[in-house]
Image (cartoon, rainbow, N blue to C red; front, side):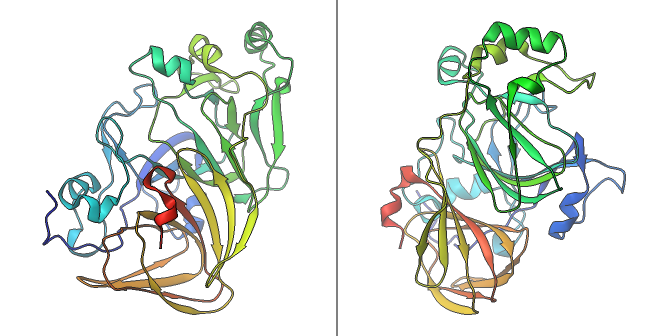
Length: 347
């Protein structure tokens, strides 16, 4: 039963930083003070995580839970608050079978190419209890001139040809190369062979899985490859993004809204405001914001005002009372919502 005395307000979280061989220090552009000194290669910032287990091959193996950074609940895990607050935090959103929050949000800094990889296909996940689907989307925040991502395998390439290309260090010619620029968004359903190219900074929205099969690592040594599992999972050819609705624009009550992704797991909309705004703020279901530009504040009953700016992630619960939003001109954010929670009821 939900605790009626628990304060309900927008939550921010302490970033969980991950060192990666392909990482860098570009996350400092988001106003971050990164750990480990100037030579530490920080590839990922986990913004909202509620995983019971992470991938051993990725250096994890244990649980990874976000800790609340603001207000009366600071220092507590998101997991604990979900358990105590119930529908005031979750609305009609259903948790994963192991009781976790059904999404994982990150920022990724690719100073070098990420490994060419794939996440489990539906068929593979059904046959292996330790493998979980991971569909994801990348919103490009920053990109060096000429930067690319790799998104799918070229039509006509067979699994045997792909295996031979791995052995001959000739994988890149078989991948679909896509030039990118800030503001682009790419949806990558589970089973898509993919890689971030060097010089790209992205916001990532994904289902809560850390199961990754590396198939090629650009000549780097010392990291495990999973060639057999990857080839079994790869959907050869371009990814199926038929559920996606890219760049559909809607003029909202106080912002221009662009639909970027609509899949069965999540929706992503970009909100942009031209003028300073003050609005009532109320949601019937949970919403997550990843702030891209500008500044603002949210006030509600039971907690101090929550201020936010570029590079911050906020979880806005449906149980918030008397919410009020203040925005500076030019504020832009990604709004993540959840079809499984009945998005038609979002106020």
